[in-house]
Amino acid sequence: MSCSPRTARSWTPALCRSYPAPREIRQQHPAAVTVTGYTDAIGSAAVNDGLSLARARAVVQALRADLGGASVQFRAEAQGKGEPVAANSTAAGRQLNRRVVITLG
Image 1 (cartoon, helix red, strand yellow):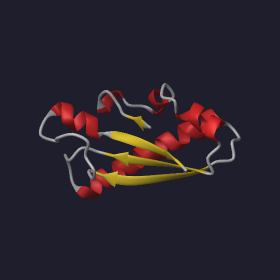
Image 2 (spheres, one colour):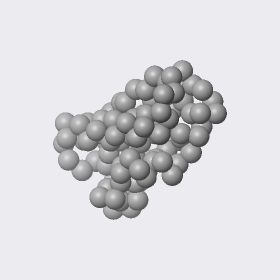
Image 3 (cartoon, rainbow, N blue to C red):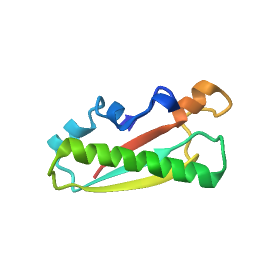
Image 4 (tube, rainbow, N blue to C red):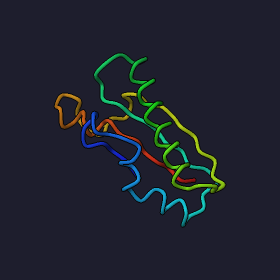
């Protein structure tokens, strides 16, 4: 599952609530959920790593709030500009690379 922003400025944890992650977590009852944050390739590695971790942590916080007292172990990870899904040479590609991936398991 992915929760990707339409633009970097409009992304909020509330946007992720429109994705099926909370429903999937409730249905599958995973022991752990990993949220991995990514960025585009603009900026230094240190800035991108911090930004991608902040993005992942914000989604973890939103999921915890949505799920209430569900007994799920959450983990936030940063991938920075690693593993792009599109070319960083265009605005559209960079937009696709600013995302989180939610893994149940």
